[in-house]
Length: 169
Image (tube, rainbow, N blue to C red; front, side, top):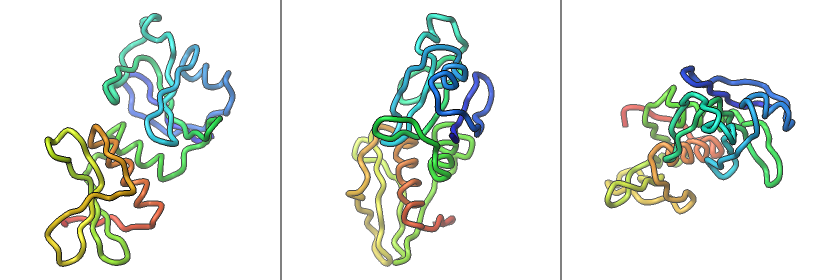
């Protein structure tokens, strides 16, 4: 299955890995622990990584990860390959290997982007109709505690609806 692996001190990269417990345990160096990072995407790390003294890898959503981490898609009861859209969103937003803010345009000319809520500590996708000044919240996307997660949600939504990314807007 298509996954992302990030080793400590190295950039994240795309890999193919067998969807077996043994292969996942080999990849993270021990028992696996899963952390849901989006509705259908899970991060897999070594459950005993801290106890084993594995080196620091990354922070995400207030959690400090040590040792290798994998990111895979998930269904209700199993792991699955990441889609190309999920792969791109995760590489951009979580691993920050491509971290430009994005704006999208749909077929009607409406613009979409992530903006902070009141107080600046929550984020959500918003839209603007042509000729209007105000931006409105997208009911289809949930509020997120950080901009990276909100932008990843919007990116996946935009890809699913075949919106075009626009620059200079």
